[in-house]
Length: 177
Image 1 (cartoon, helix red, strand yellow):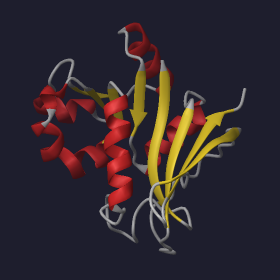
Image 2 (tube, one colour; image 1 turned 180 degrees about the horizontal axis):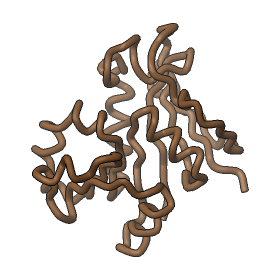
Image 3 (tube, rainbow, N blue to C red; image 1 turned 135 degrees about the horizontal axis):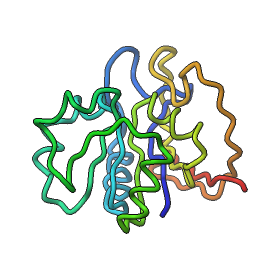
Image 4 (cartoon, rainbow, N blue to C red; image 1 turned 90 degrees about the vertical axis):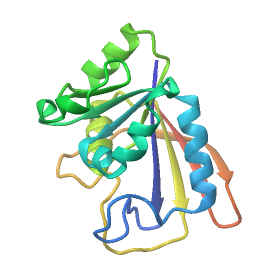
């Protein structure tokens, strides 16, 4: 099973524009890539802030055949949102989640954010691939891809560069063994 981190970032490494949540600032080219990345995965992993931001949209699509795992320190807070096998909440570690998804027969998990979750998964060593859309924006302030205070240092190799548009790049990195 492969764990793939999917993110859009500005040239200065921001996931968000200033203090705004979400990536509404991303280009149409990134949104098209994001939809394709979601179609390739059978499990979506995200943090509770990302879930809360997209809750209505996520709940509308629960019958799409994809499993959504929300990582939170307080899974019991979301008991009323749980739909077994489709929308689950956990405080498990990245290794525990990856092991469980593998045991359940899943083949590809997409890590969708936010910043704390990216940092958590990158630091755990379970991320096999990163797909980073690089947008031609500079925000100076915003949430960072790996901005948490935990020191991480995964070794990655650039495997592919795609032009999603004249201005937008898709950088694909894989974990170096």
